[in-house]
Image (cartoon, rainbow, N blue to C red; front, top):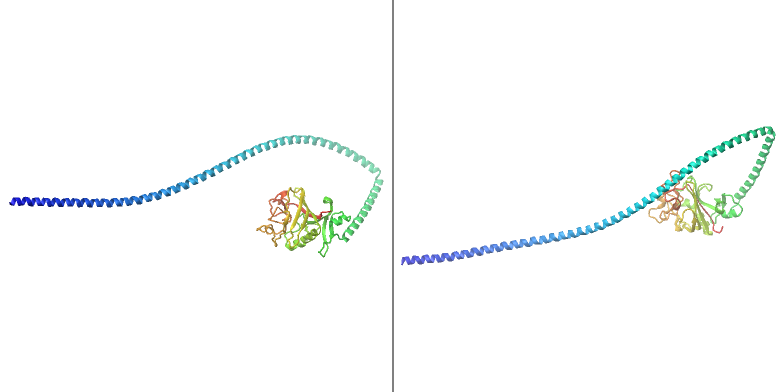
Length: 407
């Protein structure tokens, strides 16, 4: 029975141990499974975060790729434009090279022609020199004959010379008497303008006295009685830089300078004259090469001082350019102390203080700084008339003249 009890006890112990071992194994498996699940869950969470980061990076890469593609397209367009421009420039260069070749051929032809002409001129020069020598010999012979005849008739010759001197003196005295009489008559008379003086028989250019309505004292003016039929009253003249044209508004209003030389008649006088009857304006220009041109406006008048002496011009003609270098309508007069132009830059001050109808600094300025020969190029503030010699060539001489349109 003890043995039986031992067997039972052993059996019981084995069953309990087996049951506990199974339970321990189940618990171990359960714990391992939970651990693995937790680790899997953690890995999945990290994977999800990494996936989101990768998606963000992918979006950034796509955005940068799109920008790079856009830039590449723009660069391709710019490259195409540059290639087109390069092709155009190449074509222009080819055209210029062609023209240059033509000009070179013409220059060569002219050189050959001039060489031939020079040779002919040399031959003609030699022939002329021979003729001069012959003529000189002939003249020397005639002089010897004349001296011989003069020595035989010296008394008669002296008497003839004395008689001729007496005749010349008499003619000179008569001429001086007539000229003096005309001068005295001219200085005694007062005219309405130079046209009236011309129509009164005074057809010699010079200083005349005129009376302008609403101006108390008579004015001395220079009348041009020769140009284009005469009767012109000079209102502005530049010739040698002897008069400073950097003046104030009031000085340009009243006038300044010497009518016999450089001067400005005065805006007020010109305004009053041109407001009574229609006038024509003629502008004569001379460059430093001696070339003379003119511009003429059949209708011209100046507004009043309240209107800032606006200039009104119509019907342009002349040889100083196909177009007018003066703005035709309603440009106001400006000086260094009265800015009335259409430019924020204040043209009168910028152009050294002279007065003119600048508009927006404009294409002309006959009152600019006087530059002598050799210093008159590239001078934007000089005496300029754009459509004659360009915007930076300063002229040698100018004059502005007016006369009634119905003269």
